[in-house]
Image 1 (tube, rainbow over the protein chains, first blue to last red):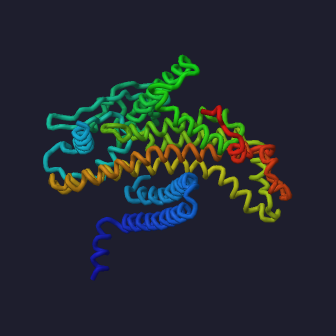
Image 2 (cartoon, chains in turn cyan, orange):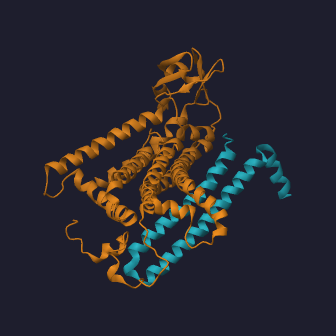
Image 3 (spheres, helix red, strand yellow):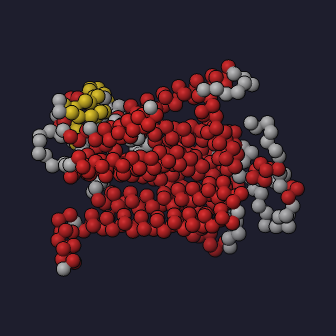
Length: 86
Length: 363
C-alpha cells in the first residue's frame, strides 16, 4: 500500500527527481558517518594528548572540509537532476 | 543597550530576505519556492533589491551585447526586463538571446560583475590603506585596521605559506593572501541582504581554481613532473595505469577546489532561503517562530563556513604549490632517518626548522 502511494507521487514528479532525493540523502549519510568518525578520532587523540589539541583540531578541520567537498560533488549532481539544469 | 542592539540585529535577518517574494505580480499566484530561491542565488542582468506593494526596487544594469557582424549594442537592462524585447534581444531564463537565432556574446555588467567590482574595490581600498599605515608607522606597534588584519596575514604566512610551501614561500604569499581575503570577503558580503552570490558563482570559483592550476604548472620543477610520469617506488609495468591517474589528478585537484567552494556557499544560501520560504509556503506568520531561529542558526554556521572555505581553498592551493616546488629530499636510502642534526640541511625540511630556531624576530 505504501509502495502504491510512493509510485503515485513518483508519477507526478518523475523517477529522476525521486532518484535525486534519495541520492542527496545517501550523500549526507556518507558525510555524516565520515565526519563523525573524524570527530571521534580527534576527540580521542585530544584526550590522550591535550597539548597537541591545536594541531589535531587543524588537521580535523582540513579533513572534514575535504570530505565535505566530496559530499557536495554528490549534492551538486542531485541538484542538477532535480532542477533539470542542462 | 547592547542587548537591544543584538535583538535588533537578529530581527534584521528576518526582514532582509523575506521582503522580496511578497509581491510577485497578481495576488493569489502560487508561491514557487524553487523559482524564488534560484532567482536569489543565480546571476541576473538587474540588481533586485526588494519588492513592496508599490513596485519593485531594482537597479537596471547595462547590457553589452556583441553580435558578430552587427557590432556592439549597449542598452539598459530595463529595456529587456520582464520579458520585453528590444531590438534583436530578449531575455530567456536570464540568458540574453537574439530573436533571429543569431549568435550573441553577452558582455553585460550583470549583478555578479558589479558585485565583483565593488568587492575588489573594497579589498584594494582596505589593503592599500593598511599598507600605507605600515609605511608610515615603521617600527611602531600596529594600530586600527592594521591590528585587525595583521593576525590573519601572519597566520596565512606562517601556518599556510611557510608550512606548506617551505623556503620559497615569499613568492607565493601575495597570491595566497589575495585568494584568502577575496574569498572570505565575498563569502561574507554574499550573506548580507540584497547581496550578490559571488563566491557561489561557478565561473568565479573556476577562475580562481584555474589561476591556482596555472601557478602550480608554471612553478613546477623537474621533481614534480618526475613524480607524475615516473612515480617513485612503483614497478614499471604499473606506469600504464599510474601515469594517466596522476595526470588526471593534476586536473582534478583544482576542479575539486572549484566545486567545493561553489557548492558550500550556494548550498548555504539555498538552506537559508528555504527556511524563509517556509513562511511563504505556509502563509502564516507563526511559521516565523520556527523559521527565523533556524535561519539564524544556519546564518551563524554560514559565518563559520565563510572563513573555513576561504582557509581551505588557501591551504589546499598552498599545498599544491608546495608539492610542485618541493625539492627532492626523500632518498631510497633511509639510513639518515634519525639524523636530526641534518634536518635543516635537507631542503624543504621546514617543519623541523620551524621548531628548532626560536623565532624571536618574527613578532
